[in-house]
Every structure is written in C-alpha cells, then in structure tokens.
Image (cartoon, rainbow, N blue to C red; front, side, top):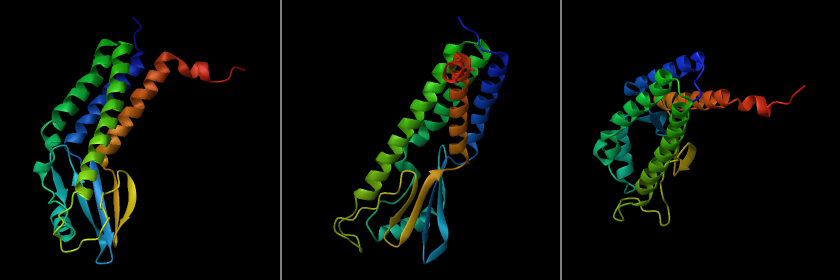
Length: 196
C-alpha cells in the first residue's frame, strides 16, 4: 500500500473542503443580450434552485413556444446537495487514510460527475430548445433555440452565453488539483520529463 505524501494529504483536504462553498455560490450562468436588453439578462443555476432574470426570459421565450423555466423542471436539484456532500467525503478519504487509491477514485469520480453533468445539461438544453409549442406567436420553420452548452450562440436577435459560475469554477479547480496530485503521486512527471 502506497501512502500519500503529507503535503498531498493537506492539499486534497483543503480542495475537498473548498467544495463546501458550492452550497452558497451559483454553479452555472446563462446570459442573454439583445438590442432591447443591452445590459443583458442573467439566469443563475445553483445546486438546488434558479435565480436571476428567468421570469423575464420566460416572458420572451413564451412568444417562440419555449417551456416556462421553473425549478420543478430540474429533478437534479433534489440530489445535487447530497452528491456534493459525497464528493467532499470522497476528497477527505485520501487525506484521512493517506491511501493513493482513494485519491485516484476521487479524481475519477469528479471527472465522471463532470461528464455526466454536462451530458445532462445538454439533454435539458436540447429538449428546451427543440420541443416548442407549435401554436406559438412566432414560429420559424426548422428553427430551434437550444442554448449553448458552453460559450456563445446567436439565437434570432439574441446573443446567448452559457458557462460556469463561481461554483462551476470551484468544481473545475478541485478536479484539476486532484488530477495533478494523482500525476505527482504516481511519479508520471519523472517519466515524461526528458532526462539530462
């Protein structure tokens, strides 16, 4: 059994505890700009709710037949807090036990969670942007309004942006730290760096 370096144990413990901030900071943001909204509209997605200008966005989207955004349409809100708690515990296990295997499981779990989360968000965005009310006031044949997964996208006269918010960046940072520690602990850097 290979034990982690003390420094690694402290770093992964701090990274795991940093995930606790995701309970009080938004995970994701969607922004919209248009000539009539030059200051932009913002919708924040948290672990268990949505906030921001989503009611105004609902009013706009009603004309093109999109569904009304409500917290109830995100069943993930019921489990996200528990999943983050599981991730925090998973990050503390290598710190407490000193076992490299737990560090690798934690890093792999964060990566898998990120992939599944993005796939779920894409699925929601696809449904939200494609399943339109055919009796909507504005109906453009063949047009869909799927928001971008990450980045910018033009939707009629709107520019939409989707990307991580504070908690999203925390998840990314903790994931990168975990992967970097796995690489460090396995000694892969010594294998990859040229010998002089």
